[in-house]
Image (tube, rainbow over all chains, first blue to last red; front, side, top):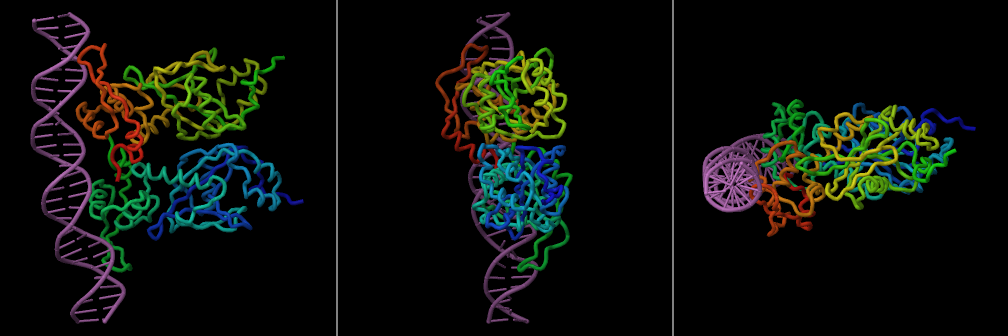
Length: 251
Length: 251
DNA sequence: AATCTTTTGTGTCATATTGACGCAATGATA
DNA sequence: TATCATTGCGTCAATATGACACAAAAGATT
């Protein structure tokens, strides 16, 4: 008989509760999502996990994301709850966990799960994706490559995207998705990608600078073709304060 | 031995999961919150409940809110999840439910609960508050009368308020909180209350009318002192469409 | 080495929006 | 009938916005 490792012993977790993470990164002027591929299948899923009996939801999400990315102190927020009865029926992971010899696997995965959705923002260049015990692959995918995920994971992903768009003026998306030093065109591209629309280059810069949340550096970004753009970094103090009232608009 | 009624049999519910509702109303130029007072105590709580094993979260919230207000088809949205370990320790309702003779009461309430927070918007004049089996009173309270609720209910309430403020341009707050016909000063007062700041009367009207989401009626609101203000109603079609992009601001 | 092409840095200008405020009309109350 | 808080409807200067022009930079092309 196989004795399960502590990390795979499902009895340590709170019943009926799970969490799914929509991890955003930004690279090559594309918004990226972290996905896992379930072992022995071609099925893709959002990184997820369960909550230990004495662990907070945020800790659980942090733990899962640390395992998937190698990063600590990841920016993450709960954005919605997915609890329709039947949403977790026919879970393809169930087969895998049974095969992997974990006790109670079938019983566990036949539960009804209330899943808490977290969205996370990470620096693409610093994350090192690695699969969990149910998956053989964990990689970044472009948004247009995420069209058929398992269960209701597409619904979860879309809900996260919508949240991202609504919170663009209230959350430090740029700070968490971009490297420490970045160019104005990169920042603009991030906004265009999240908002799904083109913005005028000159008006964008004027508005961004008017917020007083950026420090313009002496350095320029060299290496690329064409004129070398200046590098910027966030002025964290001003940034945080500006986000309190929202970056733009408001009564 | 007391045989529990079906409605009070806690075994029909999903373990570890609860929901708490922040019900907003608007009356006398004040934002009101629906609270229940726990039997034999002076302790106040948000209306809450549990999720039946075959019921969706939204259905559960609707069921709870129907029991508390008599209303159907209430506007409600999940806004956050509260799942810190220990948040449901020393629940004052536990005493009450044990006294009331329900089986498994103590065991049930000693669980750790992951509570899904819903906020609801109702027409104050149409709601008929009524207590649940753990409470002897269910009434509207002004915001400044909600200072010491049980457990983490103040945290939940504040989170709901914050959500309301953030979503003021994206959710039909006016439509759901005001009666069908309302005056411009009433609408302005609602906005001022939610946003927590004063607005210029004339500029507010100019902006509101520019949205094209209001139908100005011939009628005036009589009865009050001073000049009788015109009545307005929402133009639902334009309202919904305008909320898609947000009423104000945006890139 | 001169030229081409694309991208970036900076600025202009007409128009629209905003914030601050004025004033007459209204209608219950004194 | 005078009072007075409130409402309806406006004005106007300051600011923000959207659309666009042009020169400088830097690798690619010849």
